[in-house]
Image 1: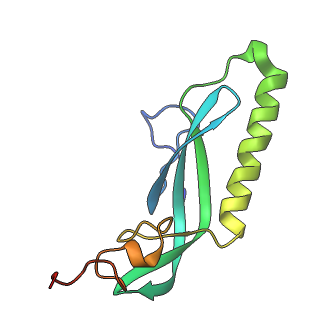
Image 2: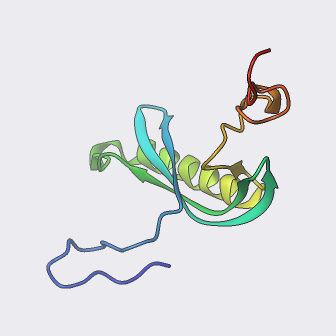
Amino acid sequence: EERAAQPGRPTGAVEMGIAAVMGVLHLDRESFLVVVSQATQAATMCGGAIFSVTEAHLFPFALLPAEKKSVNEGIARDARKVEQFLSSQGFLFSYEFDLSRPIVAHPGGPGGGGGEAG
């Protein structure tokens, strides 16, 4: 939920709850912080929750110079497309698991080394 800026804050500043920080995305020559502002629990795996992104945002690390306006518009358009994709395609994440690895490689998962060797 976004809230209007308070007195003493920079113009255009908003507050927003953050569910997760996904990382840094490089588009052309610009870098963006990718955050999840809303997510819903989609499943449970080996006792850990799996969440589906319902709203994501990209924040530029630096303001883009006005002299590169046509390039900036293209990068901004691409950033909005990434936000829309992450917010609408059922992108999943977990606080407990690295979902990019096969489940058998997770500690406590099937064959994941959760037990003692014997």
